[in-house]
Length: 468
Ligand code: HEM
Image (cartoon, rainbow, N blue to C red; front, side, top):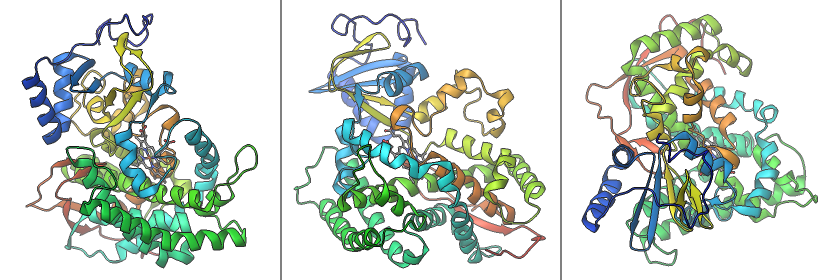
């Protein structure tokens, strides 16, 4: 990183600071916009290669910055977090489905929600979900057969959706939760389609995607509002996330309205399954391509578990399992892009950063930068062993974001991913199907575009019958 773009030098007043370098000329800029739409990951890498760790781009009324150094990410997401808020393009489309929630707001409203909801994600609280995670995985494996072909991405999505359903609503409403899951899926697809359109589309525009979002929202209301009302009337803590949302109180003892509980519950559904499912889908792909790492994983599982199902207590001893997940999220971070917008003129890395601009940063780009991760395209889980980590690699790794908006579900997600990986890999090897086409598809989450088709190989001998 150049001297000029270091985040720690004396800050000139915003108006006097120079703008960062960037492409000049309308044609060049239009070409870049095209590249951004067709191949965003390569495009972002190219911008950093061509212009350095911070660059500036203006076309029409839109100013944008691309940053590619951990110091600049830290300055944006942590040091100046109050100034750099979420961008409307990031939140408005999602808010059409889930309304005002912890994921779609900023400022005082967001702060109040975050404070109220944080205890629901405390380690002690989510520990009780480990059983749900393993039991649901075992139920999935009951349908798997040696030699069968399936799409690991699809299986992981269904599994993660089932887990978030049950941890939100508890087992007794799992039938209802499945209906909610379906509506969330439909709504999410429509939201993704809307966010991929070239221009922002207002909610009133007569488009099939807008209609689909409205239908999904109505379906969700019909299911969720009666459950919330009934739960509130019962006033009993059933241990699930919904109970926590209903009983959460702000500093003055105020509670969320039923509508707010519904918004936050829908947000959990939305934020809480696709990311984890994609992280696991990529993990299966990577393991299929790296037999040595896969063998090391199985050795650890056999040593620690000896054929039984994993529990929460086993996780500290499953160090390699954790590294596999971390390395998979380094190479394929599900949240591949994070954007922010300064609410006033300021500086970033000593350069002028204009109010209302979009600041773009990408975990994918930083995670593939050889300055921070040697041999960045190699799958090497042991780079996360203490002895191999460096202060810079730690700073450059941010699959869950950073600062006050850091993923509230990160402990939940890491617990879920490790338990699923341990349960499945103890019993099956997943070989990539010979005709598989693996390509990244950067939508809201980084997905495998054509799924991850695999052929199952049951591990023999299975030491114990699988029992939930
Ligand atoms: C591997 C799985 C996951 C990944 C990679 C991931 C990634 C992220 C990232 C990068 C952010 C920050 C976005 C930003 O700064 O703009 C975030 C925020 C958030 N995540 Fe996750 N997430 C995962 C799983 C989950 C789960 C399981 C839940 C809930 C059960 C969840 C709920 C949320 C919420 C509510 C926010 C907004 C937090 C706030 O703004 O205060 N996420 N996530």
